[in-house]
Length: 442
Image (cartoon, rainbow, N blue to C red; front, side, top):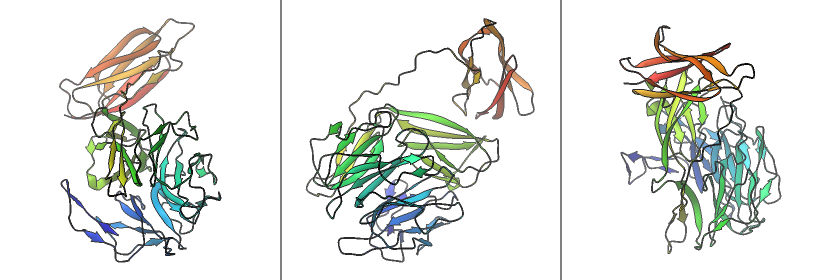
C-alpha cells in the first residue's frame, strides 16, 4: 500500500509512505478511525481469481504518518474489493464497511475506543459478489444506507442494489435492485437533478453508465439515463468541474460537549472553507474531512454551548467523471447540462414563534436575522422586540421594538464600531423569549 503526498498542489512522484506488509488489494479509504481528527487508512484485501484471501486492515495515523504495519485486522480472511467509512448507527464515530466478493458485505462497528474485529452486520441475500460500494441517505431519514454493485463474472446475479438503514441497523437484504444483470462495477450516490435527494450512478465492464433517479426514496429498476458510450468503468466521482453552480454556505451547530463527527447536509462538498468554534478558526491539524461523503471530524469536542460554524462550498450542478480500465479509450467526463434553479417554497402562515440563526455567520460588517410570528386569533398584532447584546449583557443595538402582524420577517444588523467577538441577539414576543449567538470577525 502506497501514499503519495500532495505538496502545494503537486503529488510526489515517489511514494512518501509504503506499508511494511504486502497485501492483495483493489481499494482503500481514509477515515478517522479513532476520532482524533486525523485520517487513518482502511484497506480492503483479497483476490478471488487466484484464491488469495486477506484480512481487512486499518493503518492508524500517528502524528501525521501512517504506521508501517496495521494495528487493526479483521479476525478472518476474506475477499473484499471495496471499503469505506460511515456512521451507520449515528453514535458519533465512523464504522467501516467492506464489499464482499464470494463473501457477504460486512460492517465492523466502531465503539469509540475500539473497532470490532468480527463483523457486527453482514448481508444475507444469496448474491455475494460485490465489486464496489457507496454510502448515502437515500430516503432523507437521517440514517445512512448502503449501495452495492454486484459483478457476476465469478457468480451471483450482478445487479445494483441498496440496503436500507432502519434506525441505525441495515436490513440484511436489499430493498431495491436493478433489472440490469452483468458485470457491475463503479457506483456512486449524488444529487444529479438538483431535487435534494441522492440519485444512483452506476457503471460496468464493457457497459454504458446508467443513472437511476431518486423519487422520494424509490428507484425504477430500469435506468432513467444511459450513456451512449461504453467502457470498463472502475470508479465514478462527482463534482462541479465547470463551477457553474457553486454556492458557499455556513452550517451552524450548537456543541453538546461530546460530538466530534458532523455530516454536512449536501454532498459531495467542493471545499471546506473554514471550521470556526465561536471566534476561533481551526487549523487543518484540528480536524479532518471527506469531501465525497460530506463528513468533518474534529480532534476534540468543543465545550457545551459553543457554536461550531462550518463554512463549506457545495454545488447544485454536479458533473460526473469516470475512470476507465480500457486504456484504448481513456477516462470520461460527463458535464451536467441542466440549468439548476433553487425554488423557494410558497409563502405559508407561520404556526410557531421562530428565531433563526443569522446569516452570514461569522459576519463583517452586516448580517441578516430572520424570525417568524404565528397568527393569533385574539390579536392581529404582537409586541415584538429584537435586541443585540455583548458577552457582558450590555445592549448594543435595538433592531425591532414595535407591534407587528403575523408573518416572516428579516432585519439587517450592521456592526458599526463594534469590535470582533461573540454577540447575542434576543427576540421577545409576549411570553416567548429566545436568544442566539453570532460572531463578528473584523
